Length: 396
Image (cartoon, rainbow, N blue to C red; front, side, top):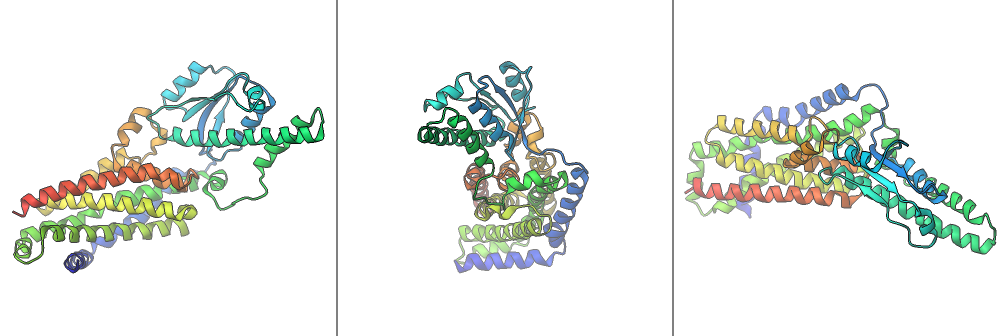
């Protein structure tokens, strides 16, 4: 284990001797975050919520209560057009013009009062990850409606008042809109109050952090290349240090470098840019850890494949531009079509963006980052195994 740490320390000392390290680690990410945030922040207060089509075929007080709760959502924005049909909504969702759509079937209110509400019709595009966010919000509102129905039914029985149910249901729905116990520090509230400028910073902060995390591999990967060129690797292999220890030492150095960069930029985003990374600190930390593990494994792969410093530069810059562009670092995937969104999630950057934005922008909980974290871990494992296979061959 000491040999691994020795190699890690040696790599980090060598990396920090290069003046370009601080340029890629801190100065450029901060500069580009501010540049992109100011450039695309605009000056207005456009609604950042996800557009969701809505048709109420029931028209009952209970279905109106559901609409009231959804209207108050800080995550989704109902788009109601009397001319819309189910076919229209399906096409809008398929074309990516809406994140999803909800249809309240006829008889919903009556069945809800009977204790078994009719299922809402939920229209989604499986390739659009935003539909999962919408579904979670709709389910939460539907559960609150049923809770209000049950509360109103109990009050109506106790008071024996013919209009007791209607008044009690209305009061219960209003109570959900203004609950007696509230958690005010939340991204959901911030979304409602933030300007377009703030929302732009909430996108540019994680996007530039990830993009320049990949760019930092340029310096880290050349360490392994120079180790082979100077024949330090061959001399190291004549000692009792194993190939696995060498590989893990290099990997740990890269991981420490990238994760340290992430921590500093997350602090900058939270304290200076007011991006709410700390709303669910453990979730943000988890995404940062697996994203750093993924990018570090990619850097290890680049280092063992590159035959020269020129190759390391090319192999570092190409993934930075391609993976960042596809993964939504430049343009949010939410505003693209379903095909591009599906292609974009081939890039690990897209999964990391999903994880960070689920917490800092969409107001979701820890469970929302489990899928992105699993995808990033899978990429990290794949890149590391490929690097180990290649390292075995080049070191023979």
